[in-house]
Image 1 (spheres, rainbow, N blue to C red):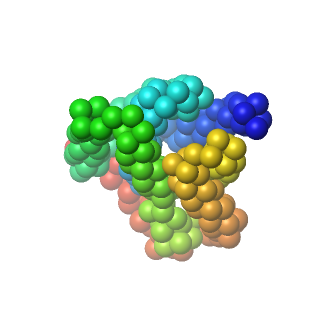
Image 2 (image 1 turned 30 degrees about the vertical axis):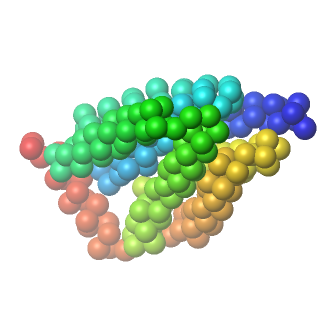
Length: 231
């Protein structure tokens, strides 16, 4: 089982790398238009925190496959968040800056200090595992806002298919890895993530050919015109 878990973990690493890179086309669009439009920074802020803590968890729990792929994720998400801060409207910049300061810096540092100074051994691993599991669920659930936008506008424009697809694959493969390794802290969030990924793909299938209403099209036109105006 140990050998099988290693190969499953390697496959999981490949899928995770693809998941981290799946929003690249979105950020090419953001840089090209010099605007984040209706995209939300929360998925990237929460994924940065999640990857940072899983990197730490992997290091203290001798989970090399977990720490390496999440370390890569930290680097990628830093680039995404930086681009958001560079091209978002003023209000979104403020929101993103507050989230980064509170979650990616404040919460991350606090979690490390508490687990390093107040806890030892298995208790430290258990506490950090519960924190990581909770944040992993938040990461997988962060596209729920995009799902609401899809239902409201009847358009999948702001819910990238590749991100939803790789969230589904990533949750599934790491849930399988967790079963093999008997790691409950990996199993619960990734099993949840797999189911949320299925929900996103179903929603995408329902609305991918739907046409936005005239009101939605007018709103999009006004938004585009507003994004071109100087702040």
